[in-house]
Image (cartoon, rainbow, N blue to C red; front, top):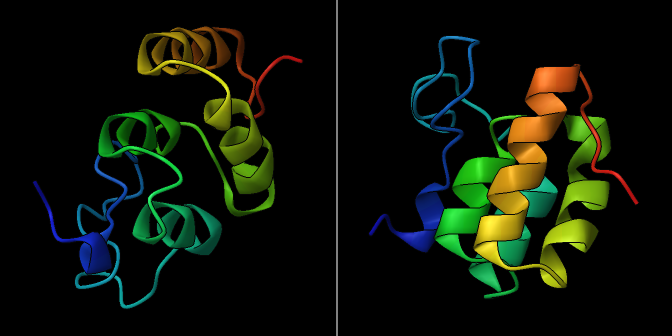
Length: 89
């Protein structure tokens, strides 16, 4: 399991595998903070980083807090398929 202080967007298409080390910044500060505080699991975070953008992190975080990882994964897949960057309500 990765260290909590090195959250990465592992599935992003922007060429940054490890956004803190390779790109020099953390593109998901809200998600990283939530993970550091234990509010979101690594598995859910891994899925969310496939679709969340800086301005949609909060919506994804709120969605994931009340859902199972399986549900988060399904929502991310649906969002990617339909071109959405926010979860459905």
